[in-house]
Length: 315
Image: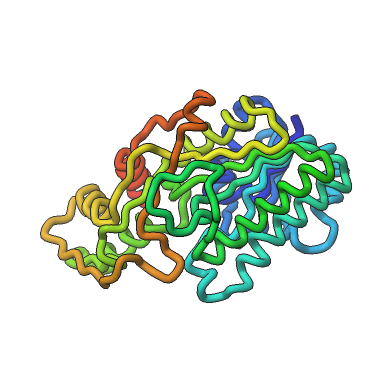
């Protein structure tokens, strides 16, 4: 198939490019490089089935024109503001980078008769829930602007499916870790310890606990849902059955860096920043019944990602 991947030079998008190319598809990678990087896709630039287009999809008709010129058959839409904390600093960023990118993708698909959309959503749409959450539970009350923009995007996708015959797969996933990541708790802890190997500031009380999924597991889950579910609107939680505390992540980073006697200095409170959800767990029964599960636990995903991150820094 001719597949367009928005945000295809980003952390998750570049791993998705790899997997789709391995399946034999032709990939049109679209990214404005505001968060993505050509380093993430440099190894693909010589592949005759891979084509990179630097583009801000919110501007003009370039995205629609590309869909028409290249006979796009399916879109994997990952372009978004993935730095949740930035939304609290600049509220417009999630409107422009998370919601408007979705609207532009949907309109370009409608105008060009492209019928299949795979959308990367998030656990942040659920807000603060005290128990494991199935896909159809509401009300949905996100507490971050990122989560709100993703929820708005899901609503528009649902409406476009029912009004214009688009078929969609919405994959909601929690914290994602792995190589090529450019921000997040692992990135922050390594940076802080490089500055001071004896003291590590930890936002909150360290008891925040969430599932962390390894990026290649996530990509396998996205592709599995896409290839094995066939409703008009297919919605799946993707994640792992286990969780990791922030303190555990700090201890794993300290251990993998070979440091000793590091003071963990907590800033206090039950969360790291406004919009941060201190606890989260998924109900994964639906995707497990479909036949998919992750290969690594949350702690295994974190430790492997720390090792990959530190190894890549030495290159």
